[in-house]
Amino acid sequence: VEVDVSLVYPDAVTWAEIARVAGAVDSLIAGIGFVDQYRGKGIPDGHRSITLRARLQPVERTLTSDEAVAVANAIRAAERRECGAIER
Image (cartoon, rainbow, N blue to C red; front, side, top):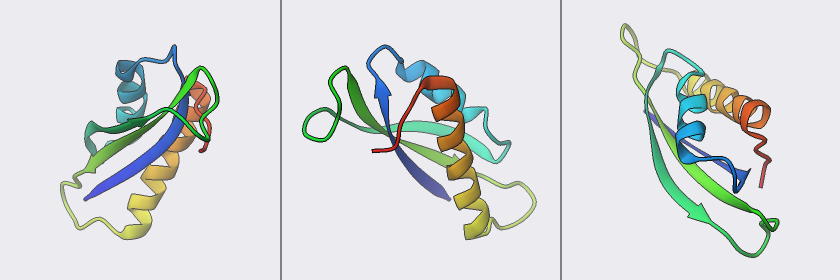
C-alpha cells in the first residue's frame, strides 16, 4: 500500500530531513520516496511544495484504509512539527 502526502516546506529544509522525519513516524513504513516538487502560483516565496510517497508494509496482516489514512495524517503532523511544513 502506498500513500502520498503533499506539503509546503521552507526552502532551507532538505529532502533528507523530510524523508527522515516521515520514515520515523510508524513501523508500518517500509520506505519513503520523492514524487514531485512544485514552486509557483499558490506557494509562498522561499517555499516549495513537495509530494512524498510512503510505502506501507504490514508484516502479519492486511492494512485497512483507515490505518493507511492514519499513517498519512501522522506524517503530516510530524512534518509540520519538525520541519515547519504547512498544508497547501
